[in-house]
Image: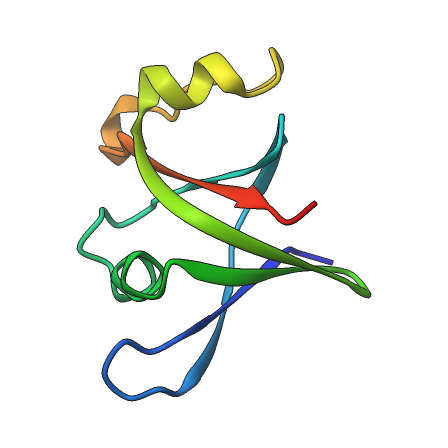
Length: 100
């Protein structure tokens, strides 16, 4: 089952569920920002400062969202994580801290 990021619309207040790849890192998770930081899901999370990650039956509260460059993200991700192919033009990532 694919991870789902649950977040609230910054103007509508509606709850959204966005399926994303979640990469566990020390103290949190990193998400690939597929369509850039102007994507609504990214703007919603940055505005709210929080989201919930659903991994199967588990829900993890996330906070302190911060955009990362590819170099910053890859330096925190496991060695098996590889840079996205250049033709996809993906160079932004979102880091969030997991609640303790």
